[in-house]
Length: 303
Image (cartoon, rainbow, N blue to C red; front, side, top):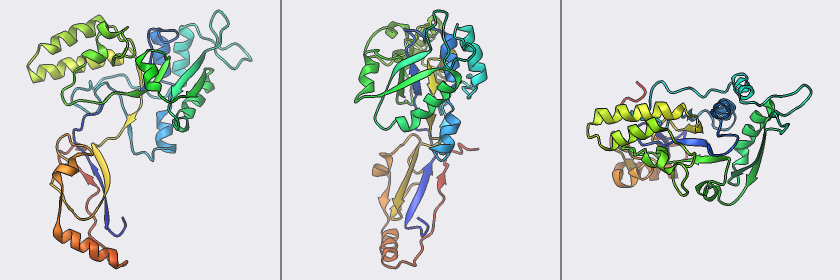
């Protein structure tokens, strides 16, 4: 890489990003209480993960349509704030008695999520969430299983770590309409059921004006994020990143308006001069090749 034989690239474009993070099952206790859901949204220290695990390569999501024109600009921010979260939990009936480690309700039951199903290897990340919750008095038990997604599709979960892919032309009906709120094998796994969102979705489905469709989706996003059905996680602020041998001819936009990891297969070509220079550099350990800009921002996203 330092000699330029391999190029390091990040392409900023409009590749669709989807909602992701930790989803609540709002049809069951304790997450049928919006105050509890909002509290949990302020109890995951994602910034700590950025610093300790992710080399600060990502940004936190804050929308059902992240990194797109459909994201509402005034969505509530889910920053780590245990003091505010504790206030919400107290209002929801969860309190910590003097000398005790765990929050309890009026019946003396401790606040415990008995099973949070995760894929093998995710404990490296989610153990930090366990610690964040324990610090405030909530016990969370991680359980590694082969297929947490299947449990989510059958609504056999309290919390589920996952997400959905994005789309250039979103269709929010399956994920947010109340008619799917209690069905199995649907993308509305959280049980979202808001009449205002239903009305907006039906209006959106019949609207052919692009500007109006953007406005409607932003409004849906604003309402849905205030229902606190997801603790939003993180995503890349770019559409594609890679390492590649310095032998390719690459168009100025890199991977196109919404291209991702498959785009180079159809858009890049072997540049014979660059290939020959690369082969010669491989034979001579002292040869350096020009290093191109790492960040390609053809559409001025950063600006």
